[in-house]
Length: 309
Image 1 (cartoon, helix red, strand yellow):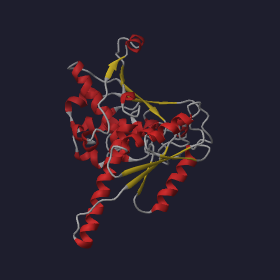
Image 2 (tube, rainbow, N blue to C red):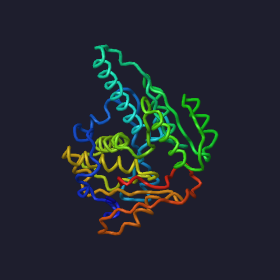
Image 3 (tube, helix red, strand yellow):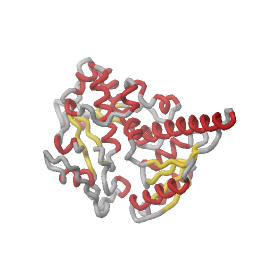
Image 4 (cartoon, rainbow, N blue to C red):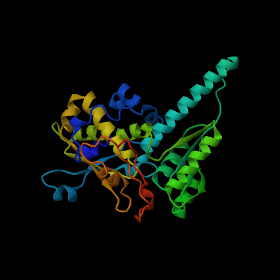
């Protein structure tokens, strides 16, 4: 359901029983995406105060989470790392069981290919992460609007890059078709619409709360601002808040009454379109699909946001 429509500035007390994944339910915040973190597939990034923004918002202090320092340059390393590490782990275990069932062999070798669609940060993230995982290859389908600089960078990182379609949705349709045709050894990787991505992204909340607690014994979070393209980061932020609220009393105090503010790019506001199409009290979810992306930031939007938000 569209929680953000019902509560435009979402209070933590309302988030109960939403966006939980198996990883969230079974792990403390320190154990979330632990396989990906232990393999160095994503990093803990600094949380720094912005003095100009704090001055504008005085007496409140404003902090920036510097996920541009992830290896690919964005927060998407978190979700892609958890998704790819989990995919490889499950794939290897399944091959091992199949081999043992046939002849008792322990040979579980075999490559797996992740196929994604992104002309921006998601493609760079999945390529950056996948190249660190043994036996994993990556193909990225990008729309025709993708800058040559990005295509060249993806190829330099080892991705097999195909240019297709006028927008991301066209590229995404081709990526999904390739996975369907492959039938085995290929996995579709959405740039934003997968619970494993959201759990990976949720680690950003774990780190923020840990880092804020180091600055003050009574630190409280007033609001978290999250950018929205397809909704993956927003889902991760909500999941991270929920997990910490219900698993750690000290962190629950930090975020009790906090708000989540969704921020979109003009010309790519698919979340706002669906948000406004669902009035308070409406139980029938209506998703709105944009006709086109009109923002100059062509890689920052999706025609339709994930229904999970």
